[in-house]
Image 1: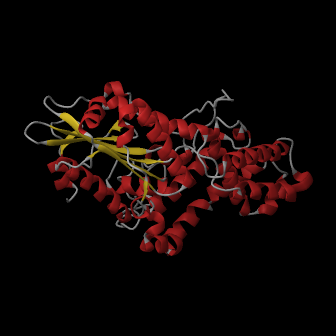
Image 2: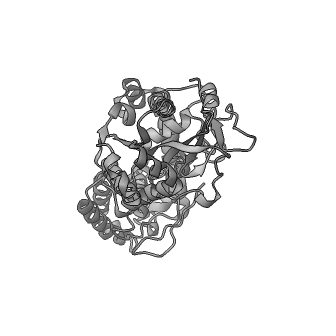
Image 3: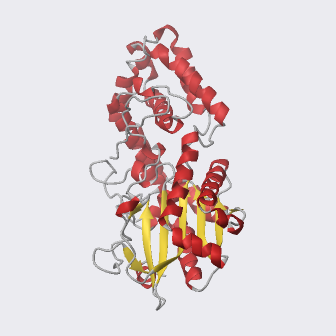
Length: 418
């Protein structure tokens, strides 16, 4: 499990961690340790797909629900529980000011820094692009937070390479490519109605462990009698509490609410697992032998291969930048058999039998980047960075040299079936 002790701008106290896919972004490898390209190879193209940056809550539903629970509890609220309502009201005010679902200041900084590091990693590529008049293509899913991420990223890239600005194309919204979890009819139907999926998620979410953990948590906030009256709904209350807890680190620039007061570390860990299980089954590797969650990402994988082919054939783009959501990163990682997404579940997914963790696979600003190099003979080499860590392609792919992070494009086409 990736544990991150976040220190917000207004709060230097350590936190528990366990934020699942709401984990703020961290570069996973120092760029100074990247493997250099083999002698004679020069960069000709780069591309990425990135999730939007850290954001506020998608809507006010969890806050409203918790406020209703507190109102119903009345005098059954403990001294600690009495601190929850003002914290929720303050969080609500911060989200309204930001705009529910919109990028936080940290999210904007994540995208700015990501672009700056890209420019610094491939300075010769972008300078050659300026000289040669090659362009940067920019695509988004059409939702405000990915559009804003796109804007922050592009502005940062242009600041790093000022002469590149006239060559950056106008943003294009492509929902088929970058919002397929809403546009693929087979997936939409399956995710809403598949009996096996719904039963498995219910089994995990409302397990005896979940109920026991929820009751233990809520007994600190309300009287034992009131918690007993909640019954199984205690799980729903703590799910809402986990939602506001897990979003807080991404809002470190907007405020500090110390929701870890209300959600002990063991509770946070369990409900991070519940959140990860939902991501695993409904968007990631899923059940053994099934492909419904990730075959829809083929359109995005295809686009990566087409972009390299175009660059090899003299295409005018020096970079292709795509801005999207976790619901696209998760299935793409599973389709490509990336680390943490390469193991489907025969038995029920747990933290003990599977390496999948939302915090590693698709944190805020999660990204997959391919840098493409060519030598005088025309051989193409590709290196992948996953959350800015040099990452091997699927095991059936043979690297250019043993232990290298570079692969010939011919080999990638073979092992991925192109």
